[in-house]
Figure 1 (cartoon, helix red, strand yellow):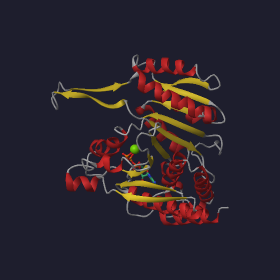
Figure 2 (cartoon, rainbow, N blue to C red):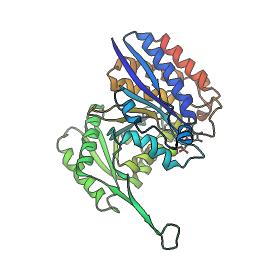
Figure 3 (spheres, rainbow, N blue to C red):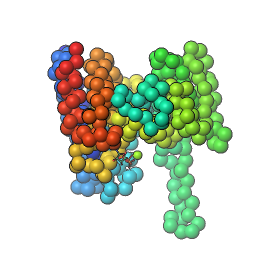
Length: 357
Ligand code: ATP
Ligand code: MG
């Protein structure tokens, strides 16, 4: 029997609440099936740690989690710590050195959940957004001169490498090929940005030649927001840069009903380093401590973790349990227009796992 060791990093705000729920659900799932074991090591890194130590995670933090089978991450960010400190100090401090260059964000309308788009039904919106997660606009390059003076200039330099774009493009084509519709949309802004974005278009065309069975089209990111909203059924797999996909996936989450259900996987596809699974949402201090955070995004992230670990049967069982719960409006949390608490949703998913055949 395989025993998976998971590094749990709940982080800040509702991250702590939803990861606690996710751990309960994964533990139940392992017990229910008896086919694999799962144990969690907890790391209390994040903004509270920062306030005590002046850093978001210890200097040897990465080596403490380098040999885990996966990382289960909550959220970072606190009202009294600058966002770039929390993001660069923890989330990106793990993603970048662990070369988690493929950020995968499935979006679909789950049973019982209403899209804010009036005519969109379950099945009309079924996407996977692949976000380049290691370079691009978030490469951290640039600088400021004459800070605070009227003549101040700041540069924010995007870095795109042929190797970086080629590997994410291949990843996206592989993923598109594995899905029933075999359809990939490549998003850029190559009309206005004529270096990196043009290279993206060129590499997409080159890689496409190796995937004759994948139908591939190109969109500019601005037009893409309209297509996602007006013709969601025409899209399937989507690949975009770090910045563009960050924005598009918040739109996707909203169109699918709530940020509270949107999961993500930060993958190191070569498996040299652990991959990291997390809800897309942030620490949501406006609802922290109220017990009403929607844990569905964190459960769906666990589904992605199980798939990555090769536990497909358990992943399917968990997704069935989640869908059985979302199908019941009495079990919707406030972000979905309901009254259910994190505890009630979690208990219902646990009951559905135990009742699943
Ligand atoms: P970050 O900067 O970390 O991305 P953010 O400021 O974008 O954070 P989020 O924390 O992602 O904000 O939350 C945005 C809004 O969505 C908040 O009003 C929050 O209450 C709501 N929200 C986010 N996640 C959930 C959830 N799991 N359940 C319920 N509501 C949520
Ligand atoms: Mg956000």
